[in-house]
Length: 331
Picture 1 (cartoon, rainbow, N blue to C red):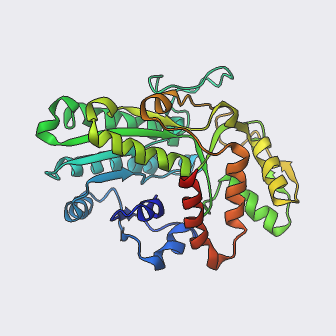
Picture 2: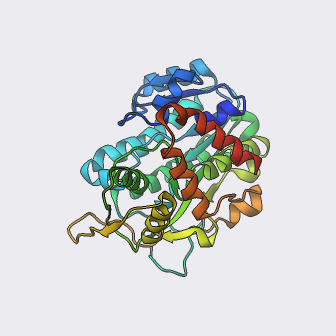
Picture 3: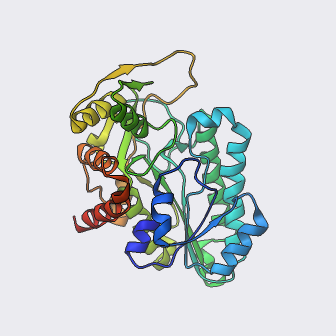
């Protein structure tokens, strides 16, 4: 997101904890000094308000989170604290800015009450839910957004508060630079690079896979339209692939191995592991019809772009990031 905003000429300030892994995009892009980066906790309300007020943003994109399903089983209360209270802290700080501001809060495709039916693609007005602490915390964050929209940022009172807010629910995102644990692409890359068999937990689980540049383009488009017509766009939007982009983990891994040119995988599913949804599909028709947004990369291209990034020499990965950004926006 920072790299794309820099590419488009924006002045960017980031606020987040230090990354919990090295050699990801944060480390690679830091030498380029493309953002004013503040290392701080979103639960620190005074610091958050101080930094936001000092910067006086025109747009706020809220992505700070505890974003891992399996980790949410290890730290459930902290996950709720970060994802729910952290979101409320941010929106309270925005309400005190005293200037026009457009806010896009990014949650997840997992906010819905998942019935795990093959014929069901979740739409923005479907019932919120969440089996695991992560998913439930993000559904709660959507309730926080809705509350602030009604209480403080009501579109009918724009002349008073000058703040508009929408939420974005993205499908499973893949792309270069991610080195988090318990993520399928980093696990695939590590195994293939080491000549090991890829260990897969839930090969038949189906997800709405998409390259990271797809939802980022959606967030930016939503923010732009929201700033111009808050009464029309102050609502949630799904960002995901076209229906054929809903692949099983098995299909994702097999495609990745084919792109890599060698490798194998094995099923390491265990009945004792924490629950993860087996089937999740998104309906993106609202974003397509109302925003004019459309996915540009099919699943195989998204996987190829992702693995091509990881196969770059470390000293070329930052440059390759901008190369892919330019290629994406030229489509």
